Image (cartoon, rainbow, N blue to C red; front, side):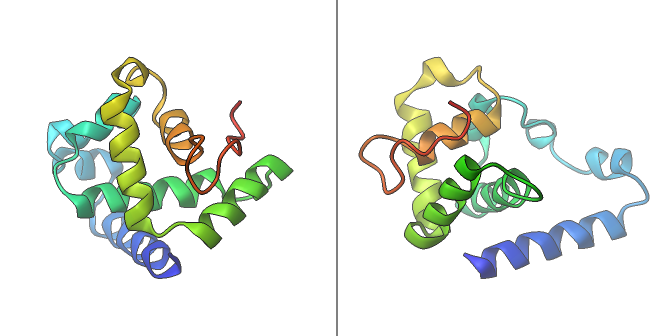
Length: 128
């Protein structure tokens, strides 16, 4: 997982350095990938690699900085029990099985996906 996190951070830094502004960077991104505000956007990400990249960005942002014990518990569980590929597969399945959740914010949908009852981190959703 650390390799994916480093790669994701490195690619993000490269993208920011290569583009004069975020607006310029957004202009080069396909319109279907510009805003990931809602969980329903997950299903529109075309490749496994792009979903893994978004997941890595989520993990970097969601668990960065000061956080409560609930966030720490989920972060430790994910790091110990889930590969990036497994996490992406869980999010894919949850998204496909729960279209009624497509209108929730993306971080909420991802957290719900990773904390399902029969998964490796049940009941650890810090957003509940």
